[in-house]
Structure formats: structure tokens, C-alpha cells
Image (tube, rainbow, N blue to C red; front, side):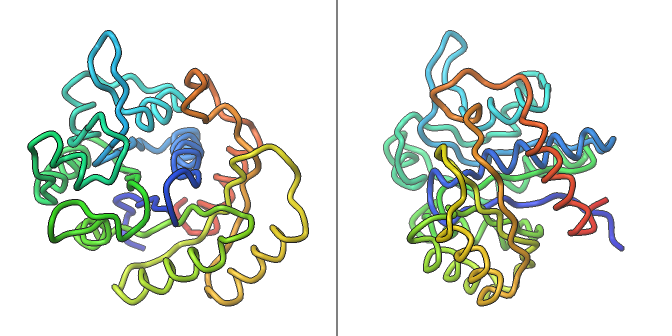
Length: 244
């Protein structure tokens, strides 16, 4: 089997748990001895602090994995960073910039030269515009990485998730699985269980469930570690996907 270059973690929407999935997979890989690092090519809703504008998603993933890259590598991990919390193309326009896929690919390959595996997290869903002509899906096709889809487990997820899976496959991308991420406290009920089974059947792809991760909220301090159960689940997914 060809050595894995990385994974692309996308979502059916914004706020569906992509960063939670990224953090869990990153930690599981590093615990297994793999030199894996995160990448957030485009971050909107950046946070201003003493060190300037930072990416909250990247900060959470790095903190969860115990990584402290220098400033130059952090710029490679997040080449496009904007303050407005809106679509990438709109945030870039507000800043007088244009998001270019070629620049993201260059940053990815520089990271890949220094590390074994790069886990890339998208922004929003797969058809979120990056510029006037290209969407997140165009970036995914350019990177050509296996895809993991993060989705909500509850009401409304069936249409969003099945449409996402259909378009990814139509564009020739390899989908490893769907992770239903519980982003609110509470137990999984009969609707969530039915959704899992329905997506698995109609989406024709492995579907897994990740329990609530309260420490991975942007309103909280970055976690020192992820819940043990999340790491166990992530390690299990990676084995199922033959990553290690």
C-alpha cells in the first residue's frame, strides 16, 4: 500500500466538529509514533491577542497534540488567516486579498517535506467559495487526499451528509468514513442511532460516532489532552482505514 501523505477532514457545515475529529486523529497518529501535523489552510474568525491574529482551530489541534511549532511553520499550517467570521472568499475580499490554491499547495508540500503526515482541515462545507471561481472542493481535488467527513448526529444531518458524500464521490475523491460528532451534551437517542444507520446504508460508507467533547469548544481554554475515549475511537478508525 502506498504510504499515506495525509487526510482531509471536511464537514457538512460549519460548527459540526471538524476540529474535534482533527485533534483526535492527530493525537492518535502521534501516539502511534507517526510524525503527523495539522494544517488549517483557510481560517476565518481569527482571534486577536498579544501575538496578533491566530487561528483558533489550529491552536486547539496543536494544544491537544502537545505541539509547539515555530512562527514560520505555523504560517505554513495556516497560510490564509482572516478576522471576519464569514465565508473564506468574503473574508479575503474584506482584507483585500485573494485565496490561491497554488499557495496552499506550496505550503502543504513544504510541511510534507518536513513531516510524515499532514492532516488538513477544511472550512465550512465542501462548496464554500475560496475565491470568485473556486471552492473548498477544488482545493480537496488539488490535494487529492483521502477524505473524512464530520457531521452532526441529529435532525437535519441526513440531507447534508448524503449530499456531501454524493458530490465527493462524483468528483472522484476517496471517502474513508463519516464521523458523527456530538457537539452538545446529552446521550445518543433513537434519532441519532437511526441517522447513523441510514447514512451508513444510503451513503455506502463507514460511519462512526464521537461522543461529546466539551473541551474542544472555542470558548474554552485549549485542552491539555483529549478524552481517552476519543483517542481510542480515533485509533480504531485509523486501523479500519488501514492508516496503520
